[in-house]
Amino acid sequence: MQAIVFIPVIIMIGILLYTMEWQNQQYRQSIRNLTMATEFNFDFKSNIDYKMYRIVIGADTFESLNPYEDLENSKKMFLELKDTTPQETSKKGLDGIVVLIGMLEKRIEDIQTSNIIGDYDKNMTRLDQDIYAITDLIQESMSDYIYNETKTLESVRQKLDTQTRQVIALCIVIASYLIVFLLASFSSFGKRITKPIEELCEYTMKLADGNLEVSAPKSNIREIKVLGEQYDQMVIRIGELIRHIKEEQELKRKTELKLLQAQINPHFLYNTLDTIVWLAEGKQHQEVVEMITALSSFLRIGLNNGRDFITIKEEAEHIKSYLLIQHFRYEDIMDYEIDFEDRIRDYSILKLTLQPIVENALYHGIKNCRKKGFLRISGWQENEDILLKVEDNGIGMKPDEVKKMEHQIAGGSKADFHVGEGFGIANVAERIRLNFGEAYGLTIESEYGVGTAVTVRIPAVRWGNI
Image (tube, rainbow, N blue to C red; front, side):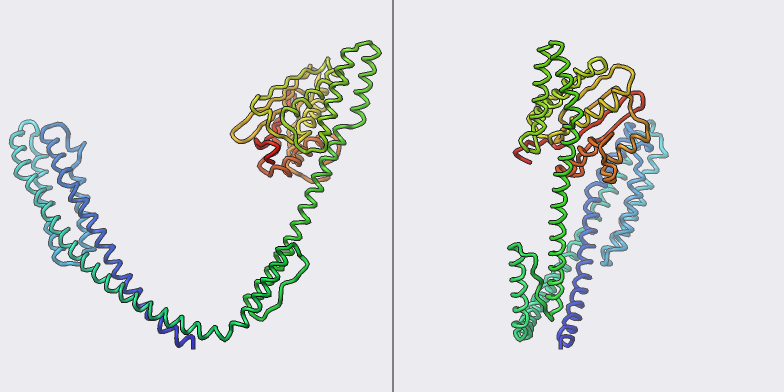
């Protein structure tokens, strides 16, 4: 029944669309021809007259202006117009213009073969009586062509209007018929369709309430069945994502805990306390006060009341406290400098971002170098990002060591994350990726015997906006 109803309708609509497309093509072609002719009529005479006048008075030459190029382009355009012009009258007019172009070309050749300077008066006469006259004729002939094409265009437009009205009327009749037919056809199936949809709606409302244990209702309607199956797959995927997020958060917690444990390790505390005892025995009371103050600040900022983020100003104080403690122990082999732009100090940073990098530079770079080491920690803003850089003039790394470190920084095998060289840096990179995304992290540059530079890239945000 549907084939009997729809196939004749489709054939009728196809014929109408084909007819309209054919008329539209004629209409578009007429518009294009008119556009080309109008542009030619606007430019040709003024261009040729101007060029020939400049040549005759000796201001320019044929080589510099080349009027023949305009004539050649005009011939090509007329041939194209002739191929696409349906009216015989317009075609004859184009043939006449081509003849005039040939005559114009001969008159231009007469001027070219003459003595431009010696035949000035004669060439001016040729210019007035030949060149200008022929270009006037060409312009008038082109105006006649434009007029004829305009009448053709109006005829096509009237046909299109008539066909459009017929198509609209036919579409209204067909649409009315289809509406009546569809209403009659679907009324008998309404209950069979609405019930599964209502059940599917109830199912989605349970999902919206957070109940991921329900299953989609079964239905014999293929589309409803497909929707139910897709919803079930979506629920499974949501469950997997929830588990993944929980695992990721757990990984963040464990990573930060490992980093904190590695940063506040017993050896560091023992060595610091031994240094304080040694200073106290030497009655260096001011140094003892400075060491204890630095250690207190170091531990206070490191713990940070359990908060993940601190300001860059606090991170700078944390690094300063750490380096002050280390400077008491390694005064003979290490100097340092901290230089942050003032405008970045109120932006937020993950706590314990720079300390592991500084520690790595001290223990694996400067301590292994025979010359006196120097650490420089700098920070600046670049567009919407903050860049923090730790540079040392230590022993540096060999190419294979750099590749290994880059692999760990890029999130290599978790088996690589052992406490030791690179552990702290790898954990810093992992924490930055977990909190800010893959666009942020660390980059490392190193040359054996020269030194190492590690650059941290984080977004320029404040703690309240994270």
